[in-house]
Image 1 (cartoon, rainbow, N blue to C red):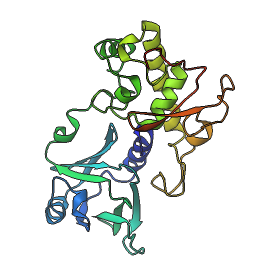
Image 2: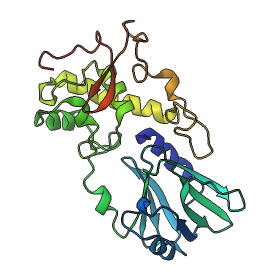
Image 3: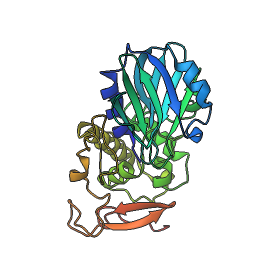
Image 4: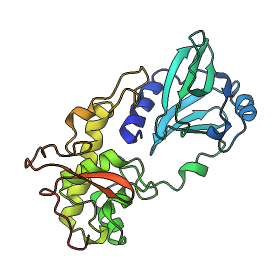
Length: 276
């Protein structure tokens, strides 16, 4: 699933080409992609609205329009592409926005998990999200205080979007490895030094992933706006590297399941807590 770095890559690329352009309509052949709108409503409401801004909140792409907000969540396999309307149709682009000038913004969504929301108030969807891990509000002190009040395990907590917005399976595993913390360690057991390491690790991993334009594992996985894969997969330390050597100590990486998610750890660099 695209996480913060992949969505941020889309936001930055779209920010270069969309603001100032107007929608001339929209179509949707899979209404379940529109939990808050009917296809006919989406088409009617976006007509004539200009794109004022493009941003990101957590894993959501946010488009500030003349009168409304358009939110897009890519989920498992969603991609965005700007294409000429005369190009052959994409059978997996179940939501298509028509743009002035004859282009289309196509939401390629083969597994149909992605979602689109047209709202007057974006806080209807975004209001419950936690702080941005690259934002000013996310400090080591905030993290220390937030973790001290939680008794759950680290991995499920860090992937909870209400706790911290944007992190997912890949970058939580990478951050925990870099911070030398086990995913089953309880949040309230972290020391001040642990919290500082984790804070630094999260910000470092996300910044590197944005610079690498995200992570791509398969041809059908994440691709950027122009169809190119990310480059972070070549430098991941633990995620997806089961039985390969840890880059720090050389021990084989172990895959386990934590809260239903495949999770990758180094058993030496990330000692398993005694109560796990």
